[in-house]
Length: 491
Ligand code: GLU
Image 1 (cartoon, rainbow, N blue to C red):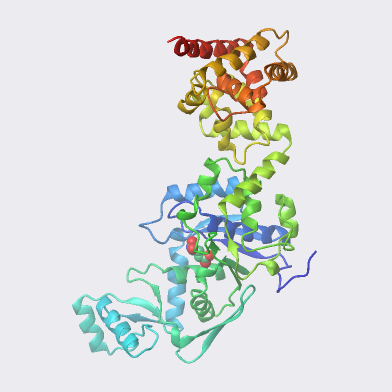
Image 2 (cartoon, rainbow, N blue to C red):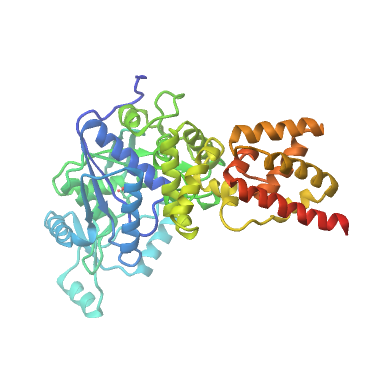
């Protein structure tokens, strides 16, 4: 085991993944879920799932269902939850009441315009544009505000003197000067909690021991720590994991390719190698080992080896790693995964069900080792489904020299028709023999055979394709193409 570079979690921990169900699960969220899951499994701890759905307008049940489905697909099962913040209103109301009683929060009546004017003034004076509202009102002032119909929000009374220090497990000591933290809102006028309140209260209430989350949340952390301390509780430990960047070192987005896990699933990635790639986004075992099974990840993972930066997601590299995984897979497991994928995408049903499945199974060996994701099956073996059709580029290629095409395809057909047995090695021997007789170079001879049987320029191997096509169908395709070629030759 390589030496840790920072403190680690070794005791059974309680960690959580707290997505907002406002869309699909992206690579970044999946990586956060994975790191939390791994450390929970590694330490014999507990992985809590919490839906941060306080934004009623953007949160949807469909998004929640999709996140749960994708987590299951990734193999990241949870031990507790899913808890929903939308169902925990009482817990937050009680926390706000306690904060009020402790004098930690105050009712703020400022309008949006007044707040903006305050920020503007701060900017003019070159101060941090943080909001501080009027904390004390006389009875008469309050009566006037109420008469005006103003509804207060609840803001945390940050004591300007002082600082909050995060001993971050990844980033080290990070100090926040309270002068730069505004009196943040903890509850809206309708009493609903803000993210910072709900997350802080939940982390405390759910006895979360360690918060592992994206670095983009680090400025929320001192606010959440202030809330937890004001409730008389001890904040969890924090580990902020590096943002995920694209190869151009810009924050990962759609521009870099598929960003949601669902898209990778649809594109024919399998969960284990995909999780393997996610694990390497900001974590490494020893700077060289790259391949891990799920079990190996659980053994190898440590918070101590999460890096401060350098989490680059490279779609191409992910595909290459995935291709290597597919090549090394047990043949039966690969075949089953392929069938499962093509069943889930509806391809098998759309092409006749059981019969199509049998074809997929027969062709699995011919594509294994040649594809880096399961969707590429269509590129190589799509010709096996549906009617025989010559694709335009194949026709173009074959008609560059019609006389030559007729000669090599005719030669191939003759040998295939004479085969006593339709068997891969026999097909190969016969065609290679013909190739030598004609004195052709291999490509000029074999490409037309491929086109004859598949109608395409890209497919499974030539001999495999002929074998997979079956004797009658292959011969009929050869004849049909020869017929079309003869027609233009004699014209
Ligand atoms: N709900 C937040 C998000 O989806 C996560 C907050 C957290 O982990 O504390 O970004």
